[in-house]
Length: 255
Ligand SMILES: [Zn+2]
Image 1 (cartoon, rainbow, N blue to C red):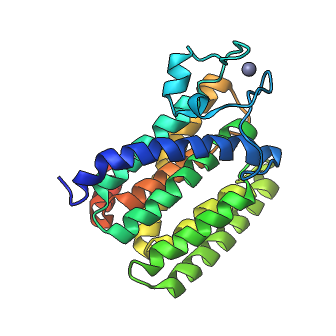
Image 2: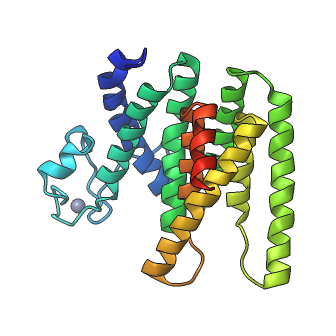
Image 3: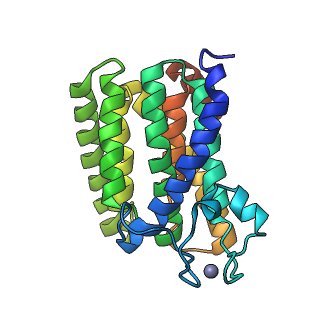
């Protein structure tokens, strides 16, 4: 039982609401549609959706995963993203005792889910999302040990190293290396995490990425796989789990 346990039901509700916002982010951003303007519409019939149609998860379940107006099938991505975000909100409340860090992680979670989804669906990491996540990573550092200078240096050096590695892979092996968005996403973790925490994060991203890559090749064959879902998972875990605990788990599992 953490200090934030009484908050859990509230976090669950907020998680669902922000999950609904996340579906809009991940649907509209890659299509360059405004997040703020325009009401939600059915993608099939264009009917404007009222408040009763936008209740997270419940609307989808009640109408059997179909549009209430035209009966077109509505993708399970909507309730899946909403439940995912709710799960992250609740887990954050249980894992992060510090209120400042909890709030920053809650703000980061929908952005991270949206990045994972846009990478899976469009092979893209919108710069707007990366920018907001960068600002939140700085805020995390600022409300933590406050060593923003070390954080910035770690991020810049990591980005340069990843770019160099990427060029080497492209030139030497004639294979598509790491995408620019993935490099930015990996590097920005350096802003939030201590140097040691960042190294553990990179190791964790590598472990999750190889497992995910193997699964991807088995299911979908060769071809570039979406790495960002594993990077955001590694980052979320690195932020939520105490550094020393995570380090002993990760170094043990990679031995
Ligand atoms: Zn419809």
